[in-house]
Image (tube, rainbow, N blue to C red; front, side, top):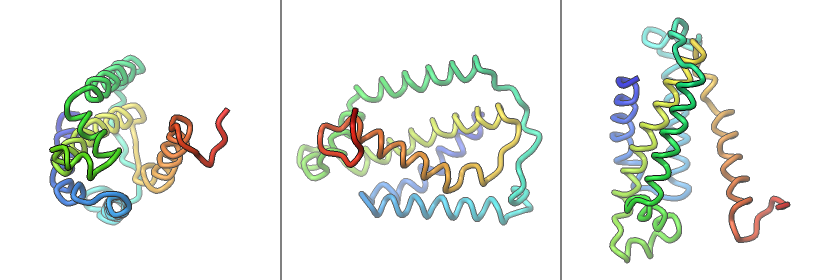
Amino acid sequence: MIVAVLGATALAALLGLAITRLSGLGASIVTLAMLIVTYAILTNWTGLTGGAEAFYGIPVVTTKGWMLAAVFVVIMIARLFRGSALGLRVQATREDELAAASSGVQVIRSRYLVWVLSAGVTAAGGVLFAHFLGAINPDGFYLELSFLTLAMLVLGACRVSPGPCWAPSS
């Protein structure tokens, strides 16, 4: 787990140097392109990954207790992050990038640190998921999961945002 989290974090640190300089639609497009390139590598590099076949033989060591503990740790990380100086700076860049930059917030640096932190947390979740199932394949993490996550973010944002939204609130 440590090797996977460190590897994903290192890769995110490298890719984040370019991605975090973008904002809005450009960052979304580059992130989607990164997903497509990663999927192509995982499905076509049969010598390293086995191709489109599933990765079998992963030891099933994750229990519901481990998952519950991981959820607790991630919630604590998110809670501590939200109230931290970095968390507040990132919230400011989300609300108004120009105003945050005018107030002295280093927008690119703040987004870069959050990008790397989120990659580490996501990698830990992926390792737990793989050790729970015992086998994973690249199709399980491709466009369907990405669009489902995006739909949840959009609909969830509509429910909690004070402004108008296309989804009816009840």
